[in-house]
Image 1 (cartoon, rainbow, N blue to C red):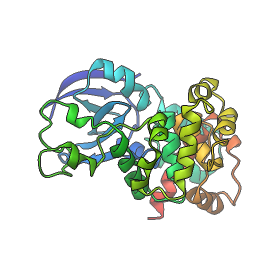
Image 2: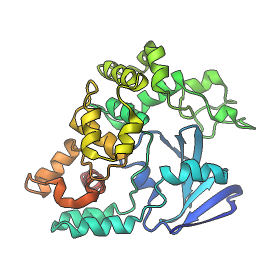
Image 3: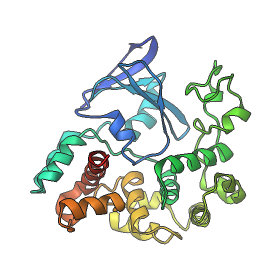
Length: 314
């Protein structure tokens, strides 16, 4: 169980959460599970990111593993958005122990040790769906760019709603922030609802989504009109059901559906397979790895494998 205390950290009002085991902010944010994070240039002893969760702009930092520092956040915002999104109630050590108990692979055990600080974020299902549709045949920098531009086109600038919004917190704009300049950045905007996209589909085009344009529109139509009920899917808490319903959307296959199941619906047995995972399975598991053998946290094991092989092959 974590503990939290309010204090001043580097001259800023902060809520410091500790007792999070191996929790690594960098590994969690940059392991490929999410795309709306920005590294903030901070002091050498602090790693800091800015991200958008729903209608909340979050600045979060870390000095040591197992501790997260949330700046300028209320208790209500912490309980409503921060606590679930960052999976603060998850016992990361228990997940690792369970996964290791299900494998004889020394390589996977090494991967679990290397990536033990990864927490599976609880992302909004709709945002995860669109994000992983965009991820198809794409690289992370371009995925993030497309998402930023879509948010700038449809969303609300959360930073400009703050008092004393007199300078860009990310250093992207060298003058006082304003709507015109911020739209070229897109980093502090809310994610559009399905209804927003369906009402004005041409707003997607400036982001150049390519063949994914039709897939996003089909997803928006199904969600907005209730043919794909995300709340019903979430309530079912069934990986099989989640896959079945998501794959009814045009352009959503096994890989995208598995990613959305894992990162948007917390189906922790989901096991997305992309080129990195195929490489790992072929190289270190003799081409055969049945996710079912890894237990109920196979999706966490997938993240261990994915994160580890990407780093050892750099």
